[in-house]
Amino acid sequence: MKFNFKVKAPGGEYREGTVEASSKEAAVAILQKSDLLPIDVRPEEEDEDDFFRFILRKYDKVTAKELVIFFRQLAILIEARVPIVVALNAISEQSSGKYLQKIIKEVARDIENGLPFSFALEKHRDVFTPLMINIIKAGEASGNLKKSVDYVANNIEKNYKLTSRVRGAMIYPAIILLVFFIVGFLTITLILPKLTVMIKDLGADVPWYTNVIIAIGDFMQVYWWAVLIVVAGMFVGTIYYLNSEDGKKEFDVIKMKLPVFGSIFEGVYVSRFAENLGVLLTGGIPIVKALEIVSLVVGNSVYEKIIMRASQEVKIGGDVSTIFSKSELIPPVVAHMIRIGEESGQLDVVLGHIARFYDQETETATKNLSSLIEPFLMVLIGIAVAFLAFAILMPIYNIAGQIE
Image (tube, rainbow, N blue to C red):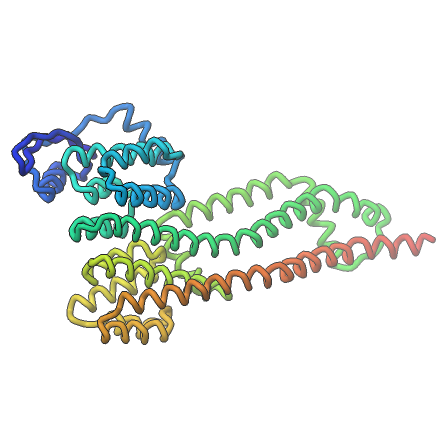
């Protein structure tokens, strides 16, 4: 919800603008955190611009690639001593995404109205993660905003590459299986009934599995549309459930139990945890706060719970390694290395080593997975084709031989 405000700045000048918050009290709190004295705060009426924004957010989502480019360009312009408002307006004009362009302009306007950069980003949590916001906030506090912006760009890029690597390894088998399903569906619906006409007309004795294939072909010839509706319904229903809160949590558990893929996902989440926590600690974020932030961006509810338990342990004076050593999903070597980092006071350095190691392990595993899946799928398709040939063509040849 947006609120129009009029405030008095520390220098005595009056400023006006808009701030996004869940309530009027929250809007006042945001302004006060920026050392601004609220004079008038009123809710902004929704208009056509809000509807346009909703449409853009739904159909022009900001990608990781766009965010990397945004933060890279911003870091260059800050290093060149370009004022941040001027830099943001210049970047917005070059942005290819309409929604991101609109967001950048709003951020620039909020900074002009007196809000710090991090608070301006915080208003757009659908685009900027808590990790990005807190790194920027640490950069503002230390006076090294350029370095923080570089950290954010590097972090987004590494996470993007890690996710893309796993997604790429799964796309190939998914496409092969989809094509196999389509070809199989068309074969059973259109071709199979024509091949079995001779067998049915002659009334010859055939094996039970051939009768099963004939029955399936007859059913598909008449009710193919019903099968198609059921399959489409199951697909849509599965996608809908996986996008729900309960579905996401259940799928997070399933992913970790999958053969072969489970170890790859484990490497991805451990690498992401180590990379993000290391960046936050290097940026000066307290470890409890850093763990809470990482739990939100690690991308798996199972690991989120483990990291939050580690955060609670640190709050009462314990160590991260204590919780990690008790979890089956955290490799023992990771817990041991984190313990060394805690004892030596170089946890951020150790986390960097962990991230690089598991990043390389994930890359190797995904390459090997692609090499293993291809022959497996070929064998699977070959068995299916051989079964159809044996069940249909062999009886036809036998009948033809008897006629001769």
